[in-house]
Length: 305
Image (cartoon, rainbow, N blue to C red; front, side, top):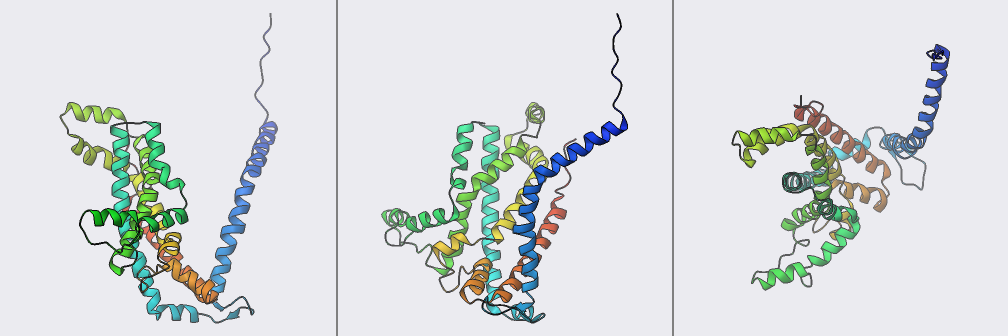
């Protein structure tokens, strides 16, 4: 009895197979690439060009060179908006990161219930506008249930969204409430890559949970935590919806974050060239922060062997 031996494919056959795989890959990538070109790259390039023009939708764009950027440098409201945005980002990122890390570690060390993970993620499924309106009702100075609880405790009602001191922290904490579950699940996914035998060996050596967190969890979670921080910082600098539906930049520009100021310049005063210049400046700031974060946190390297 003879057994037929299969000969290896020829080079021409392998080339045809590779071309077929490349064509199939191109078909699957094409919709995403088209969306990137139409809705991201082209608007970005057009925005950069508009930043060097005077444009109000009613007349053709007029080239003005660096005039918009010179105006931006001497605009006190722009710098005030940038300061408010940085304050918001600091509060939002600080509280959100600590809370999300605590929730992720508790999910990892105490329970891995899918039901609890779903509950934690629930606020993220709500849109920013809906979340802002709900919290606007809850924190209303006269009728909100939040202030009713404060008054029932014998304290003075707090104008959470109507006072310059309280407004920015309140908006930051509203967004912390909405996003902390999603951030926690990202960190929880990173915790799954840490081998359990490391914790078991540490327990044998008598290490406490607190010591294991500082010596094992935090160092090995660093790359994932760095990426999550980059994502959340970029998202925080782009806050708009919550401000628009709760305070509209008030009181007295106390919550006039940069995105809201850009929106007002473009669609309120039809100064699209100046709004584009501020948008380009924000893009440069975010790019610099991202590169700096990536390098300082060594996001591309892991301590796992």
